[in-house]
Image 1 (cartoon, rainbow, N blue to C red):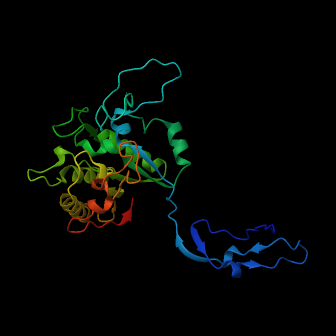
Image 2 (spheres, rainbow, N blue to C red):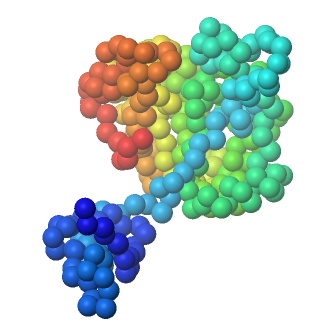
Image 3 (cartoon, helix red, strand yellow):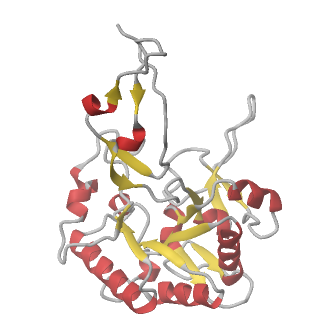
Length: 288
């Protein structure tokens, strides 16, 4: 088989290229061996562009608020310990969770330095815990979560998120609580807490670049009825258009459809097609 050597003459790092191989492989100069071929990348046709923030990362909401998060792997020979209950319930995985204190996003200069090297990026502040976190819109110490919630996000903690994002050149993507506490009497999503979070972010001089209604809605503990999901997405779009019109709505944010620990053989009930079958048909500005 003939050996080929690719000489890269020009590179556009934010572009995706396509083109016919026959048109791109040219004869090598006479001074080079006949087996060497030159690929003229400058001649490749651009078919799309990648956001400079494409390579991004997630900060679990429970890391910001503190709470029972995934436990570190046990050390060899370490005695078994009692598990802490996580948002999936205690039976999800024995010894899976451990109580964690909130991370220090403001005072940890080493964390800021290392994270800045990943920028520019999107910083997703979400996760399963975010589905039941109440935004405490005052400057009092962190209180116990109200009925229907599992955690509390304080203004000081969210201010740390906004400040950290500015330092590390990240744009914020987040999601909102959709638990029983964030529901109106008729079962519809209540956007009040989300509206307060938008307002406080603006007060801090920050912005929320993108939002998901909720984390992994297709495997929510109380499975979403497609009609309720459609109505909730419509409420979110109305909120964004009124309070933060430059914010993108992303989704559906599904998971597990190929199978994993909870669903080795995923049921139809968790399919994205079922989730999106309600009316009005949910609309998204970007895929997540």
